[in-house]
Length: 260
Image (cartoon, rainbow, N blue to C red; front, side, top):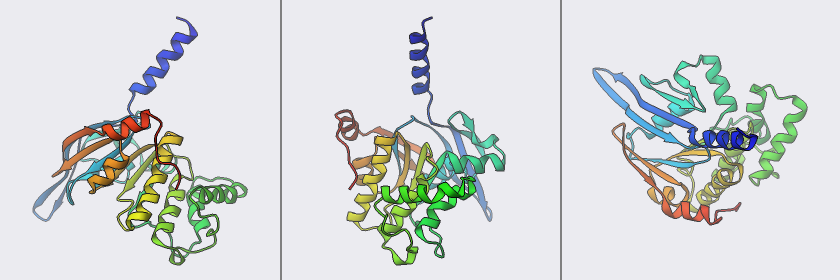
């Protein structure tokens, strides 16, 4: 076999291997005498570089699935495999490293530390990753510049608008260059204009950095505008999986949202 053939076969194998694969994934817990089936036998795969939206009403299980993919919770049964690692088999220390280096998370409530400046908030994951102190400042500055906050680095979260706080949260999520961005209702606390700015940034990271994105939302219109696939959940079960032909056609034509 020639080196060209081996290279082609390797590339094909990488494309065929999903970034995320959940198999009969379950997360059950008890509330008094009641068994809550938050996630109940979900099987799905997400390709590397794909932008997927998880949709459903409150209590459908979409955030629970996201938490399992993030390694913030462990399944009752079944498996969730990310980049060929079964998260259920990882130790607490291995899960912590996984969350630090492989996953970036953005939440509806921003989750910035009020007593820290934006630069300090963005630096925090690098401290945990033991990045050299001399490098952290320039990397934080670069990350905040990327999201348009270079003039706000020394401000604290309370001094910023909701959109600016979410931009800072994005910068923090991406500071360790994760392969996977998980977003839980990232525009839920924002007005429509600011929400569009944030989503355009998320799409840019997906398209230009090749980052795999899984976004939880209850807004179908938002998902249809940005996601390549729409996955629907209800009562902890997967009830629909649709390719978004409009977004996929635009991506193939090279039409995408740039930086606002």
